Amino acid sequence: PTALAEAAAAGLRTFEAAVADDLSMPRAAAALFAVVKAAEQELKRVRKEKGEGEPLDTAGLAAVDDAMERMDAVFGIFYDVPVPAEGEGETREAPETEEEIPAEVWGLVGSRTAAKAAKDWAGADALRDQILELGFTVKDVKGGDPVITRV
Image 1 (tube, one colour):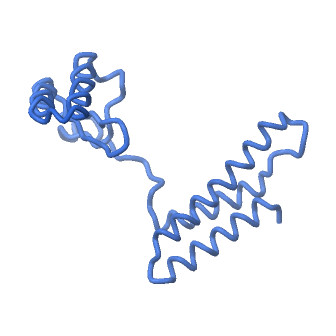
Image 2 (cartoon, one colour; image 1 turned 180 degrees about the horizontal axis):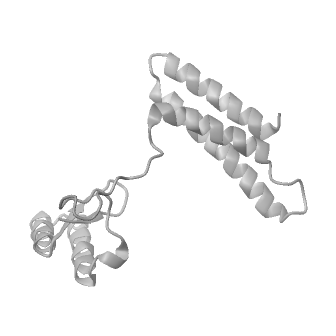
């Protein structure tokens, strides 16, 4: 087996041991990210060598894919977000794309984010209400951009 395949196997063993050890999810997640990092390093190596060195380790990447699939059987994080078909109801579970959100809503969301940063909670609430009147909701995501969806 290649070094990448060995890293995938070691990550999977660590993952399985963590899960068996009273569901130690922090250790299990660290094992998942170790496998992802090993695959990323392989891709970076090939890009850096620009085809002049060893070819892409496809067997190792297949081992990584297998390990991640087995880990995902526990985590359940690699899935398609369900979106109801046309006419199946008013709710929509997937976020709107940027093209579907009017510029006015984007402006209000930006102003709301600035108001929250300035701790102007009343102003942020008023802007949220204006966004709602336009038919959209805003969900704040810690450490990330707000998620905007149609009501």
